[in-house]
Length: 322
Ligand SMILES: *Cc1c(COP(=O)(O)O)cnc(C)c1O
Ligand code: SF4
Image 1 (cartoon, rainbow, N blue to C red):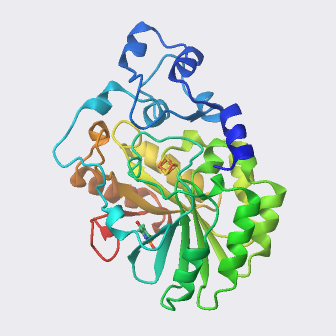
Image 2: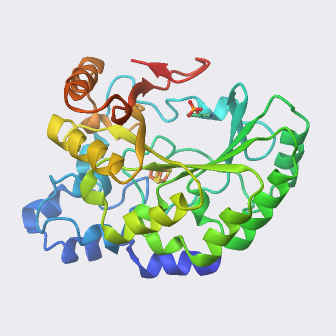
């Protein structure tokens, strides 16, 4: 992550588990459940920490971000790279799996570390922020109509890097859409600065945002209003969610999330089944549990507020509808 931005993330986050444990007033028993040196480092924005109930590791936000000893439990089928992303690496930071669109792995840095992250073992390419080779690759393939800025989190790049990147992408005639996959505003909505909004506004290509959130408690008025500013530029915002045991695996929670966001103009896109990465078996739910929840949701919600329940099956040509 660019240095100045990284300093800000550090200032506004807990990166030491013991500091977070103190802040959350965990008792001895709860401290004993924490995994002190997880293989995927701990990172929790203070904005999220203040929304976590004191001395409770079972709530929907605590479970997403506090590393538990449960991460040491193995599980059949839980592997380092469940989506086989590494076999789709192309030129430099490009991950090209589906026709017509590809991922640009812009950075390995995120504003928070989600314990269930499917890319937690990904070996991110070195050298941040510059994309000459990748731009060449996209230029040379007229079938690419969309570039997805992913990572890590693309909002970990500095404004200057993003501005340069959008400018280079804008100059590719066959490219039609630039998509951001980001979770950053959930932790640090201030990242949506006036300067960043200006850069989005100046893009010659249509921009689409897909934010990632799993529970309505992650949101607050600042986050929603910063997203509103993005929408006011004519940029649609969609939501992707991971279905996670003990976090959002009940009807009420999903209803609150999808209705709460739809009423803010953010429509659900995908509900992902957990990608079985090592150390996440305590989040596992069966396909049937997910399908049941989706069917029930259809009874309560307008069709546009029910996401597609999908799973990434390696080497399938698109995300598989369950
Ligand atoms: C999910 C994903 C995409 C985007 O798929 P959509 O169905 O267009 O949202 C593209 N590339 C990779 C590697 C993906 O994992
Ligand atoms: S923000 Fe996304 S990429 Fe980053 S840790 Fe969370 S799930 Fe993984």
